[in-house]
Length: 176
Image (tube, rainbow, N blue to C red; front, top):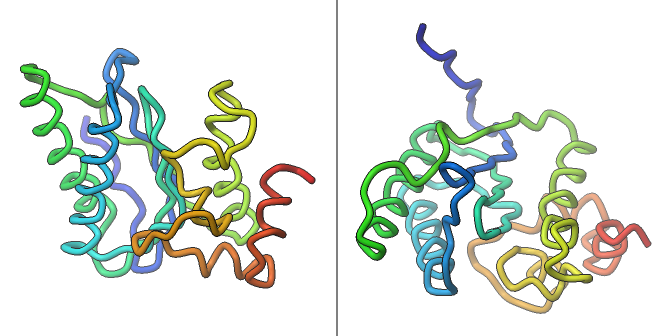
């Protein structure tokens, strides 16, 4: 039985989760994460979208993005395929890297958009990797906190809910 097509329209906002096949690591070292971010940047240049948040864990990743003119399936196919090719070549593997199709949740409200951003940025805290999301280098949280620049991350939409105040956003994420 064929899968249902994903809901897509220009301006659709999604929370994307990609998990390693059999819960295996999809990022084994810093270079893997740097390569993934480079592929994400290249994908964004070829198939433009707004990237609101990301977090790269060892065996899964989260993206919060808004489509512009390309459907989400085309974006994720390019991204996952390019990274899988890199990973399999580097580690002399073959076959699937990711567990099935990526998971996508359509975000329909401003409240859900804010909650998703907070959820993504708190992922390494919940996993016990850091106490403060600012200390996790593989997420977009330091960009929101004003501690790192990134031309790839679009902060305006999320920070717009907080009068464009980074500190107010950080307090929201940390529950202060």
